Length: 412
Image (cartoon, rainbow, N blue to C red; front, side):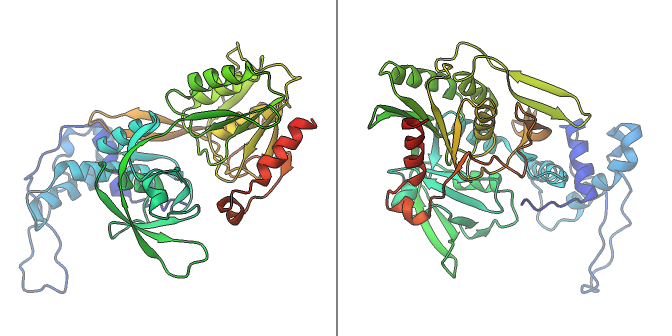
């Protein structure tokens, strides 16, 4: 769970920044309070209240005054000058988003925004692992086969508590993920907390250029189509349509869609995937704070809408967000059966607001409901067939969940 720091001066500072980008300046007269442990220093003059506040809209000056007071004090009194104004702005922006009573609203600075966009395009530079950013700590969901993460011995369930010696236990895991990213060929040392291992330990990984296929498909024995969606990225909808079409040409007995370890992505891609199996209807609802709703309907033209063609969706505790939208819609319409364990339960909607500095404000604006008005947030989706898969089974290549899905296809 993200740790919120609801400090009024940070909130005030961010509001001021959003309204007045570019209006800050250093060197404004101010003062600071001396610690009692340093009596040899003469006290500075009393700070001038609200210097800089004159550029704030009049009706908000009382709220913003503490920010300007702090801003002035830092520029006048901080012992290492000059102060990095951009770092202060980024800190205030991040503080405002952290102050919201919500686990998913966040600020991403310009570099973090670029890294996120690259990741969602399916290519990035990093260690090569699917991760969960919705847990208490950044958690390895699964190393990508052949990746530096796999070569370094990282495993499912590993929790990252420090990056290059910096404690990250109090940071938003989404921000920690961006710290792990970095140029190919560089090294990053991760401090790992592993279930079943008493003490944390360090793992050094050499980053590489990683290419993630968002969709992979093949035919299994007994003529069953099997499609894995790794993430809902920029091209997932078109890639899924192409792979599904190719597999359908082989006249499969049924289709298994694997959403395990898929922690989400773009809802546009989720809508496209769900529409391949549904001929009509609502895919999901967005419900806003004032009670209003917006519905997202099936796009039409799906390739696998024939109800006689059985479909099974594999899910686990790491299936989240966009994955839950797809799984929830197919389950509600009885177009597919879910197999696995209860999903993560990430059922809120975030909008990405581009900022003038190149960063992004990620703001929760609504919650999702399935076509049958089920909430996903904190509850997740319960599979039609509950089947556990242990870490030991996964490491040994044993997959009882996939086995159960195949049985359902053969005996619908």
